[in-house]
Length: 229
Image (cartoon, rainbow, N blue to C red; front, side):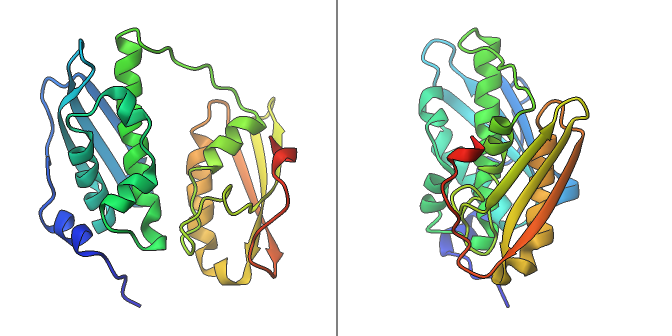
């Protein structure tokens, strides 16, 4: 079945804005992977006194939604302060494009992640922030899975309460995640696991990630999540 895009998504795919790169950029960030199908690189010029993004360009490797979300993100970011950009949510980007199909919502997540990564690197370089010491634990795995979406619903695995169990073996760098998989989501199991693997492997110390699906026969909503935090 053909994927239906909004007119704005089509417009930004056909005529993307701010394509290219800034040679003397103040901040650069690349997120995603060609192996997984989508990648974005941003280059930015930021005023050190006002912390306003004066110019921004992008290069994209991916689908129509990947290009469209990156294009729209550059329009939103230009003229904003670094604090305003850090407050942006992927749903803000989706709303600006008059919506995205659920199976393409991950593109808006990637576009925002890459943009915030560029801002964070700039803030670290200019003394406005420090690099966090990230360790392999349940909290970091939980945060990583908050950016993994179910392609059918467009909700994150955390929002939909699909994460049933997380186990960590720090010495071995092993992460085990049990995920509730409903009948309607079987078609997307491979894509979901690929996203989970990519996000968890980005955590320092995560060397081996094992994902196990547990069948459920309801809407996918699970009980309270506090026991995993």
